[in-house]
Length: 358
Image (cartoon, rainbow, N blue to C red; front, top):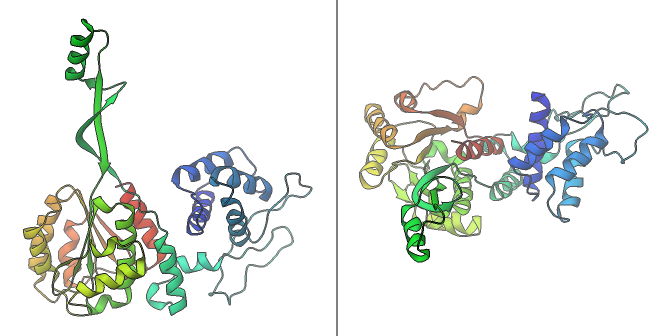
């Protein structure tokens, strides 16, 4: 069942990249539907996904294209005469590898180019492939965990709203109904610090495009800063609707592209001038610290006391043999809630889901 859930979740991500609103709730509905169906029947899988993941008539042709690419073109009519297993095999190489062998009982399926690109390191992509990944990042819906607000709203259940109850009693001459209220909720703020130093050059642009997607989804609950040798707020520049224009505007105000890294000093300046109180603090860096690692450790401890959660995004974490051996990473590691990968589109999608459920 875990394998089925992983397969269908990947299919939902492919649909979202193609413009279909296959959000988490619709994906869960699909998985619940498949619990009552024969998952070895491509027809039942096709119709279950079409009925649960599509919201408008415009979604139907996109769904058909994605289903054909993701499951190797297998789509059964409502009435079937043969039983065929739905299997999926990732290509060994980017479009050049051989698909799995056809044993006569299962049809070979080749993952779409989009699915292959999702898991490739962005530093190793061609310009055309990187542009495609950036296009999919622009469509990323950056969900956000919610926190309780101090404001109240009327509710059928909850605490007693004394003021409204008394006003009603004064107007009607008696207490006819007890009014109740509850706290509203609001998106939890995300503070994103993006390392734009020389060692992060292969990933900096993609990270800033991910930051742009976060800003576009929650403009009032996202703050972005570039760090290197200087701390630079770039939230206002990333609010532009077009990703390319937003990146151009941000690059104009960042004075230290491909420079050195002084994370400890920059983090100290951030905590002195700004605040991460109650926010999810995300630091995107490889941890190559040219300053004093002890200073970075001290400032990370301050940040951990302020923030609701501290997440470090390291592009090298995506490799199985990665070890946090640099001075900066060793100093920061004791104060982190999560150390996650940041090398591929799939890694950014997982980070987005983590922010939505922190």
